[in-house]
Image 1 (cartoon, rainbow over the protein chains, first blue to last red):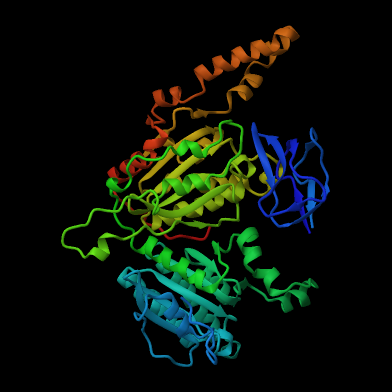
Image 2: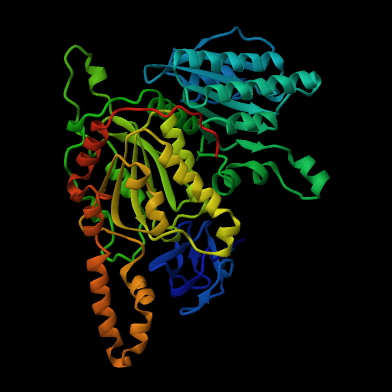
Length: 70
Length: 489
């Protein structure tokens, strides 16, 4: 199980994957907006997206849970 | 390359591993095989002299005693004397317990020899099995650490960890390719097979030990490199295809003209494939060794795919170590910049982004090798300075025509500089006013106009001429080499 956490304060701009979806390493799960950049959050391992802890428009803090890939 | 799985052949045999590393039939032992648990040898890699040593895991798990350590010291000292790379093939449980303090002293002498050689000759380590305790610090002191699938590096093994902390962890999770390739930064390159680990060590021996000379004829104008970037300046992208397109490859290096007086073999030398270091650790900055115009260069590039390309404490440290290694070994640098700034946050500050970021400033300012910067999209704030700016002594700073060099993006600047003015404007006029102010801000502070007036950007260059212009700038600068070691920052 891999917990994907925010590495910086950001707005959640787009959700790019659905709960239950098969995820490959390198797939984009959500796209954040911060530092005037669109920043894709990328899966580090392959698996199934079992939890999405954010929705579009959320403001997340460094360390907040974004998603879980199992 | 590795010997096939023959019946009765122990794949840990150090002689087999040395034979697999060197060009066929070039291995010659520098000391007769004995009970020391270490073999040292001379051989060729792509036709050039290289020294290597291998610990013998078939003898006491490759544990290092005084005799074996003396062999390693001799191998390193020989490489320094002959100014050739030295490659260590590691598979060792650490110091020989039975020898007690004598073994510790000897292992310490190996470390001292490595530090004496640091920055003078390339030192490459290939970890093919467990390398524990003293054998862990051996690779760690060298310039580049490669780990095969069975490689494990740790100071204390799982049993000691369990008895001291109660944590149940196996060797792989403690010190295998995953933790060291991604979390610790101890390992530069992780490979799927032992053969591939040795192949990378061969590539690096040639890239660092036989660096070649610039030939601008080999770096002619070509593909539009900007086509590898997205249209939107906010959009993230992977910078690695751009790095690959900039460097020589069989695709973009025209076959060199045959040189009179040389054999056909020598003049048709094909480029060595680029080797990315620390690919999965601090991936927001990319550090790659490759060839440009026929000569070895080191490339440092922000990667907007990760953290928007922001610098942070780990990536600054990664880049700083790479810059110092290249400087010590005389490898010119190419710095590809597309950076929104330093990553903000409590975690970063507490992680020492000031201290670790300072390493990158120090590394660039100290380095004497030719080093050329290219700004592709934007460079802002403190990260602008850190990415080999003119102020830190860049040989040349180029920018693509649409690049922005500023303290921050124009819209962010307007929100701060004109906060009151915007607040005071009637709501229905606010957006129009903001657009107007942004245009004004871009005119006075954005773009590259002001940076060129100040002389901190030398020239705008077209994406199609990038390979040629960078090669020419590097080739025109006096070759130099930093007089310092390569401490594993």
